[in-house]
Image (cartoon, rainbow, N blue to C red; front, side, top):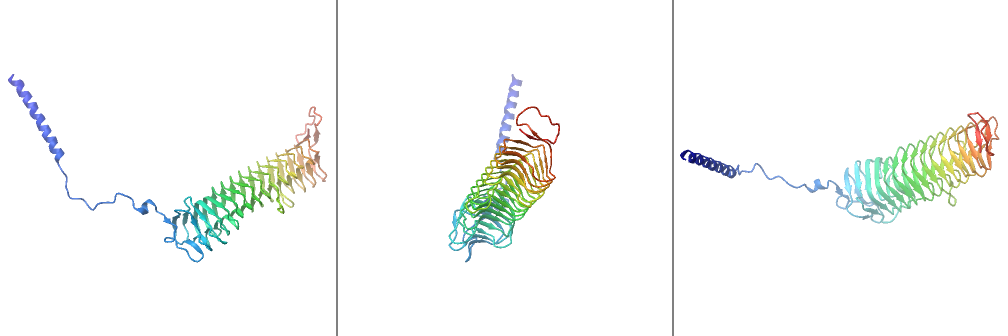
Length: 413
């Protein structure tokens, strides 16, 4: 018994010592002397919004401008702005400037002035995200600037000039309506995912421009009016009051739709696509235009029309002049299906049906016509020119079995 009590006593003593040791550790304190002055625990205002508000204090104007941005940096609006009467809205007079309209509107105060104006040669500008409305000398005018980005702008009612004029750079995700011209861009610019509606002209583009995924509709003049060396891809031009798409020499129009363009009043045009020499028109649709669906006009040479559909146009489905290739197209219910007015063209593997005058009309000389088909045209084939080479015309309108073994045969059926 004596030994057992000794063990219990020892265990109790050990437990007591352990508790006392834990209490001592918990009550121990470090140095009460602070290591240094207190540090800030919240961000400064400049860290939260590292941009400058456009207002009279930060961007004061002058006799010609409501506000002037005169230093590089990022600027933004905090509400709608109506320009002072007789002045431009915001003048950008520095390089490396971003102007964020922040979802607000920049509205004209009257007179022939500009909403956002870049009056001199500047570079690396960005104007974005808001409405520019009612300026008679243009909504956003960066004509002289280079490397400009314009995005997510709504350009409305700038009736005396252009909604957006971009010297060089890129315009993306913008909408222009009821301006004199929706978009004007200079040489080497890009326009992507933009819409021009109810302007006089939808898009005007200089040489070497790239236009993709854009729409021009119900403009009173041309939909797209472009220079040379231009690419237009995946775009639509419809119900405009002149030609839907016009491009100069050595341009490409790929996978576009240009339909129901009808010349209004004294306007010239009414074609779907009108192109110059050395152009490629491929995988396009041109229907219900007042004149030709796809046209190269007189004097143009060396162009290609491939895999296009031209339907129910008021004149020819496709018309070319000299040394062009017209390959694998469908022309239905036009006056003329395919019309080659001059020499040296290759008309190969096309289908023309239901055209009210002629399916194929070759009025020039030395043309090559092979592997085509014609159905239900008033006249299927007409080759009055001299030295024209054609595959045999096999008349299958009465049905039966094809007897010709020529791989170059043209068919009527």
